[in-house]
Image 1 (cartoon, rainbow, N blue to C red):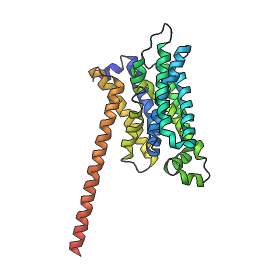
Image 2 (cartoon, rainbow, N blue to C red):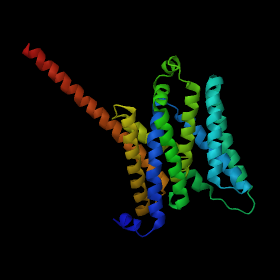
Image 3 (cartoon, helix red, strand yellow):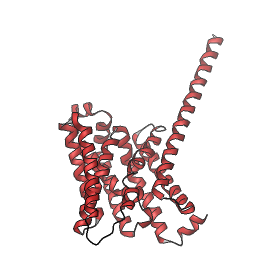
Image 4 (cartoon, one colour):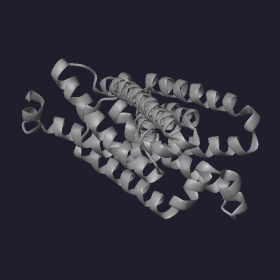
Length: 288
């Protein structure tokens, strides 16, 4: 109750809540593609490369989120090219981008003259520092992700589930895969301020993985993942406010717990369904 009453008193808390809800839209949509396509490691490579662009932007005196967006898109194109032309070295090259990107960011931030940067806020998130301008930026990226999904939904679904069949149907698989990685890049930039670079993968994959357990279609999976992500970020923010905990870490832990609970519930439901089926089969055998 203290959290809900504080929402009306503190603008920064309302901005944080709205930021988390807006971020859940991108997470629900793109996270579903990431989980189905099994490109979590690629998403992690993009996320950790972003720090390099942010560090360079700081050093040059430009807004860090602009540097994050540019570096994320560049990383998406590089990783897409690597997956097409050097698949046997994909893990190594992505790991190199991962490490070099973060190291570059740390070096440029350290050498920024007369400017003390709170590096931890970008590594682990600082949702309470979201401004109205940040909310507008996140909303624009959300609109871009929704528009791309609506325009290329059929192509994205085919490439995620069956790229060989997509090739036979004449769909440019390489281009669609690159487009998907660019959507991942946009989502990573959104999540930087919510949970930070280190915990991006948790929010990008865990709500979608939980939703997949109870979904019969990709569209339903996106909807459930979006609603679940919004609920988790809201509860995480409430816990962080009440118990003075880091909001990003709280949200990530809740996401992990939610996935384990969903997985356990799915297993129990399957076991009960199997037991009922066996009892019906046994009863039918007796009656015959």
